[in-house]
Length: 408
Image (spheres, rainbow, N blue to C red):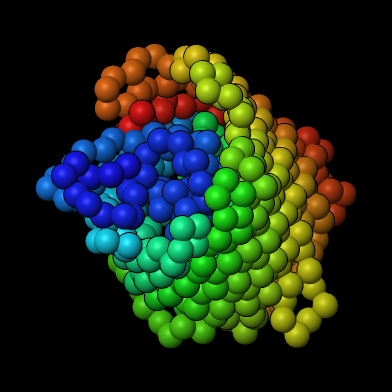
């Protein structure tokens, strides 16, 4: 998209279908510098202000979670994020200023919402068990500079006091394949938990037209956010990663990434983690759309023989903008933190959990600036024998919700 009356050679395709890899990179509509298939049209509102293109999108789920079993809990909460962004081109360059904010520190009370078998980060100085922590008020504050090296080659530099380094797929709140599921994935802390990191610097190069590759690397502070979700943290750049994204066609995208995270978990300060991820994403259709994805993530404790893995399949079908069907299937190793150990001892794998989710939502009304949906999902779990005494064989959860979406 060219700015009216502007002679820049750099396009500004913030919204709509991206017909080339460069156009997809330049949208910068996902988390960090991660990419989804170019045929996905992110829901957003856009306007022009002089030579700046302004964009905003976001969503909020009002959720009533109900769970079975001795460890199951019920809770009403809201998950949400809001993403304003501005772009401007200068000759062969483009500047993007972007932030992402969340009110979850206020809309999720008690430091987490219930989610069976979930683990990662802390609440009240102890590991979170069977719960998902809220996102921070400041999820991202970033500047992105793109420079057109050649007709089909692009240089990208990303700098963020808080942001998303180049490891993992698009974070689950922004993945099209997970767009109707209000809950976090069980593999979040093996796949994409770095989407809120501090002091992030990323550099990458892209080459290709409708097919191509995007290679990038980051330095960042490895410690995950603390329990104060209202402030920004800082720390030395002590962690690194690298990611290769392959685009075999407009509807497909794959990535492999590896990174070394220095002391990511506060309850295990002596542990460094080597994380590997791989993922495939696909998008099909125009009026009826199917978004699907497969993700693998592995954490390896540096200096130890401990590995744990998570596997994920998810898909969302939208039909005529009125109906949505989705599923999520996970197979995830769980560690000793799930047993409630408060001491900062080394983690070890205690078993592998399977989770199967199905859901449906109906669009109640849509406007030029967004839509509102009513939906629900059901999740059932298969418990490993080592955890049977704590959870039972097949605990389950149900989550009806109201979804408010900003942008179309």
